[in-house]
Amino acid sequence: MPFSIVYNSLMELYYQQLGEGTPIIILHGLFGSSDNWSSIGKELATSYQVFLVDQRNHGKSPHHEQWDYDVMSEDLKNFIEQQALSSPIVLGHSMGGKTAMWFACKYPQLLSKLIVADMGARAYAPHHQTILEGLNAVAIDQLKSRKEADEQLGQYIPDFTTRAFLLKSLYRDNGQFAWRINLPVITNNILNIMEALPAAYTFSGETLFVRGGKSDYIQEEDVPTIKTHFPQATLTTIAEAGHWLHAEQPKAFLETITHFIK
Image 1 (cartoon, one colour):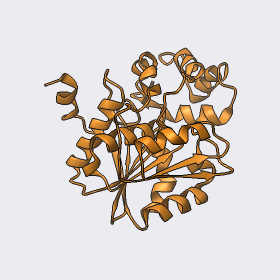
Image 2 (cartoon, rainbow, N blue to C red; image 1 turned 180 degrees about the vertical axis):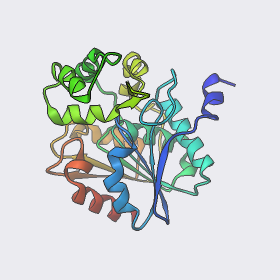
Image 3 (cartoon, one colour; image 1 turned 90 degrees about the vertical axis):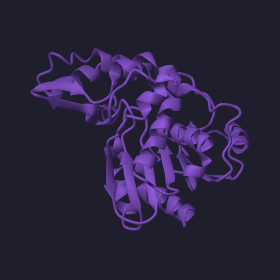
Image 4 (spheres, rainbow, N blue to C red; image 1 turned 30 degrees about the vertical axis):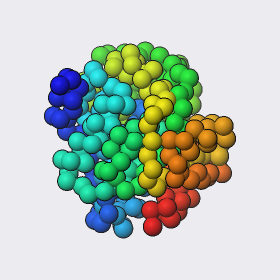
């Protein structure tokens, strides 16, 4: 039996559970965590049982040298089995969206509906190099304050909002600053997260793709590929949103996904 499967059977992902009813699992994107979805999760929890999950090497979930969509989809399968969930709805954003696609195609019997937020099925060119350079440039062992980390990161990333998002993964451990993300593994394996969904992978269940009108992650030329993998997929565009559509247009995002769920 491959080592990855043995390890995955022992992986216990960190999660937050909210509400009661039909289960919805939400997966965050690259460099993120379950906390990024707290507001949306609380809104959904008025009608559903919501699980906000930290994927491996992110948030409070375990770190491991294996990091690709195959093992993350196994993590999700094991999470569903550990929680004894029956036919959950799976929602993933960006990297989490690709994990959700991978999982749905491998284990179609384990979910009822799939929602993908601003992520296509195609391969993507590497585009996180500056962020990784900035994160690796932070002198984590010598940091005295979060302000100091922000100043160092600012030499690479001028946008305050982006820095604030990244610095959510910075925390103190016994007085010493540390990253919640597994920065070495993410840096060395970033190309794994740019991969396309395997050509033979399909999911015939109900599927919703939601894209930001100001984002270039899902373009018109991507639609035929999406329909090949997900023949029942529908695509909705939130006009005034970028890649972080759930944060930029939360009301429109919630209305879109709840209409699909119902």
